[in-house]
Length: 434
Image (cartoon, rainbow, N blue to C red; front, side, top):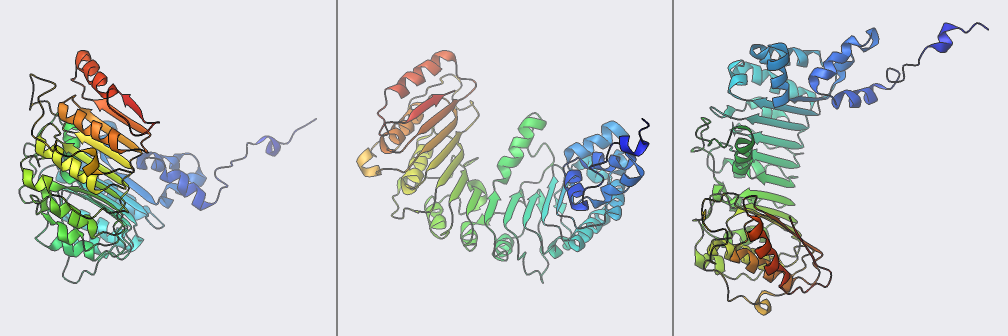
């Protein structure tokens, strides 16, 4: 029996899908791969023009260098892509290093932001990694549909007639340059802001450690002297914030420990707090660290302390007071300083002066259910902190300790034996050492 050719043809299921489905598929591909779908068939020639998520990140730039030798045409390629797009742009990511920037001019970047403001962009990320900070074009402040904004190593200078981003939900900033009080005005003009992440110095230190062999920010030619300082009182004006991450060394005042509790007390919806203590070792006094505060902040459920030197007695006191004043916290994460330079000859130094007069009765019970400690070095102060948490946390389920990679097997064993001897208020508390 003769079979018709049309009956044997394989049905093109993907091409027959609605445009919105095809757009979702293309948006999940790297930009360069989405554009390549134009060679699949005549029907697919211009499908890529429906892209709504554009990610021109470091991988895209490396692709231009390694695969096409079009490094010098970085700006022209992006401009041509934008001209062909048909629909709205929901997400735009732009990565610029010094080599990228040499192939651009301010007019290129200004035209892109003008395009985005007309396309209703909702998620925007701009990153510059060396040289001078990027001057953000005024068209940025016309992107009034923005919901998520990330700015790293940029100069923020809103125009006088700027009235804020009415729909902005999250803001993440890194090494942001701005005039005094400008940032405070900026965030107060974002009434729906729920997530504020200002751990920018830590962000760049992480990048440099992984990509640039621990070069300093200064060695990368980055201007960190002019980075704006944020007043904690200005953050308090954003009363809708639910998640706050801040580097204490870049806040004003940075030496008053009490200002942390005052800030949290003014943020009634805050349920997650991340405090980065990088370069803060000498900023707090022992008296300030031991001062007691009356508020308990019932809404705060997650507390993260990053880059804190627990081998320093004052820093240990700061950690203890934070935990005591946030008794309703259910999840606690502490990352100690990674560097071993402070005590290279003794992995378990003698305990520094700390709040040893704080017993279980004065500290009170906690609602803690999970605790994760990273880069612990087996010091007596770390043992003291864990001892307190175990004794005052009747609902604790898991306490995980990730040891510093330089800690030897003998020191690990000594540390483990100390932890096994500690009293646990929770009958189901499990200690995991790794």
